[in-house]
Image (cartoon, rainbow, N blue to C red; front, top):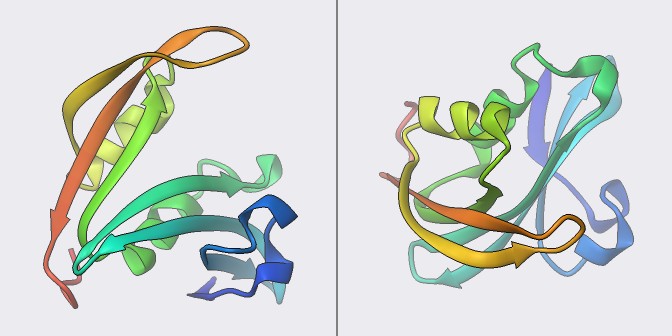
Length: 122
C-alpha cells in the first residue's frame, strides 16, 4: 500500500481544484481524499472515498494519517456511524452540528475537528 499526493486526474472532476491524496495497491488507485486549505495550518476534509472491495482494510485510515496536518475540519452525516467511528479513532471530536446540511435524504451534519501537529505520526 502506498499513500501519496495525487493529481486532479486521480479523483472525480468536481474535486480537481483541491488538494488530492491517493492510496494505491499494486499500482492502482483504490481510494482518494480531497482537502481544501482554510489558511495557515487549517484545512477541511471535503471528501474521502475507498473502493467498496477495499474497504475495512485500513486504507482510509492510512490515507487520512498521511493527508491530515494542522487543524482539520469535516462534516459527516449524523447517521454515518462507520465514518464517525473512523474519524474518532484518528482523534477527531464533534464540535458542532449543521442543521439540514445534507439533502436526499435531508439530515444534520456533525462538525468534527482534529488538531494535529505537522509531521506527527499519530
